[in-house]
Length: 186
Image (cartoon, rainbow, N blue to C red; front, top):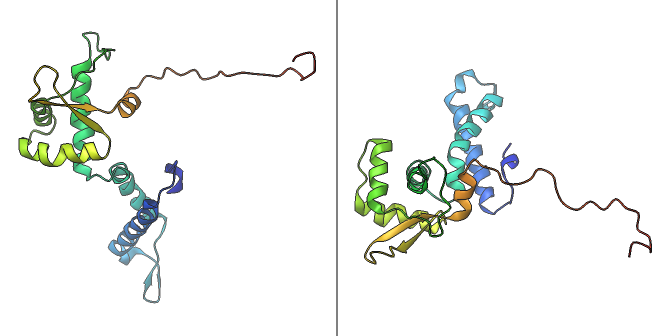
């Protein structure tokens, strides 16, 4: 089950398997009265494994990016929707502007309040959240071209493209060379 979700293996996955094993053991211990026992050993069953993987799926994305789940949730639930709202034209489509629009910290804090109902303190956003997201490669910061004192936050292009639910790729294509190779074809 663990290997199904991994495209490229990294050394950190050895630690992640250990974490999943610990989750399975924790579920077995929480339900010890309902589990099979071999002497003093509690045997984990399929239900414990499924429960552990259910929890792992929730936190695995942030683990892959080496981010706390809260910081990743701010990116996914606050920054990306705020950026998409700012970049949408009146028809609801993302604009193909030559210079993409960045988010100010105030816009991020406003969207955070709309989504969570809690205020996000400026110093916490500036000193904690933005540096973590920038180190993981999810965002970049650049000076505002109109006001150099202000920094704008831009989601990285590769990830924001994958968040759009539009597929511009063809399903079939490529070169088909079914002709037999003879000296006449060269």
